[in-house]
Amino acid sequence: MKSGKAVGPDDIPVEVWKCLGEAAVEFLASLFNRVLESERMPEEWRSVLVPIFKNKGDVQSCSNYRGIKLMSHTMKLWERVVEARLRKVVEICEQQYGFMPRKSTTDAIFALRILMEKYRDGQRELHCVFVDLEKAYDRVPREELWYCMRKSGVAEKYVRVVQDMYERSRTVVRCAVGQTEEFNVEVGLHQGSALSPFLFAMVMDQLSEEVRQESPWTMMFADDIVICSESREQVEENLERWRFALERRGMKVSRSKTEYMCVNEREGSGTVRLQGEEVKKVQEFKYLGSTVQSNGECGKEENISENQGEGVQDSGETGHAVWFRDSVTEEETGVRARGSRAEDV
Image (tube, rainbow, N blue to C red; front, side, top):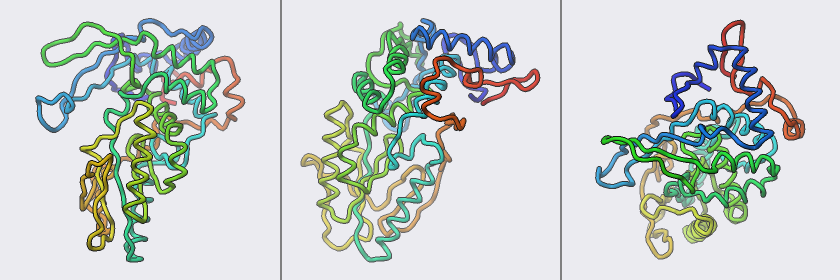
């Protein structure tokens, strides 16, 4: 875990554990083993602070604000232990580029550009719909999360461990005029959590399992979905399949932010509709920081990050060995010591 991160309600930064060196490693290993055995984490980890930040748009619209959960750094280290073990046994589909080892935004951008250039050079149309999900993390129903974990093959003990992370979770919101009273949060994934990105990828993988077979030209980067097809009718049909698959499980497709683009468009190719409502048609779209255009050319690139799933480690140990090990090793705690100085794993 990197240094310099905002601390949670306990005001204990990860730098404390790094400065303590081997003593911290031994203490954390012992603590995490007790949490794993009891399937019950400390009550202090259940409370988080959420400062509110303004996005672009109308200041009076609540949808233009976002909150980042400031969680205990020690809990984040525990989440990374659980995440590393889940990754050993859960397989995510190849269409998912977000938060996956050895994959990045550039891979998703490259795949889309190659597909667009192929159809441009062949003088054929390629129809693309860029799907936006409303408050994707915040809308994930907890029961769907447990269902998707079990369906992905996660052992019941680890389902209970993750359930404990969400049980009685409490939040305090901080805004310009002060802080709210503490209240319970009973839906959605934890924003700012080290484990949430992989849990979300697991949910998306299970909810879209059937529909992916009907629309193979689909790419996902977390909640950014691109659906491609050779015909407008087919991409419209695939979009409706995705909408149904996601919305019946609590997710929601944004009608206002989902956009349609036709590459190498011929005259009168028409538009795409979603439940009778016309999807906005554009000539260019900024996909993961890179602008793609309807003529198949590349636009200006901005802020393309090499997001390869921070914290994804490959220890070389088999999934079976990690899965059935009933204790947490010192190497899994998230810090290691060299001499008197502890560093990131």
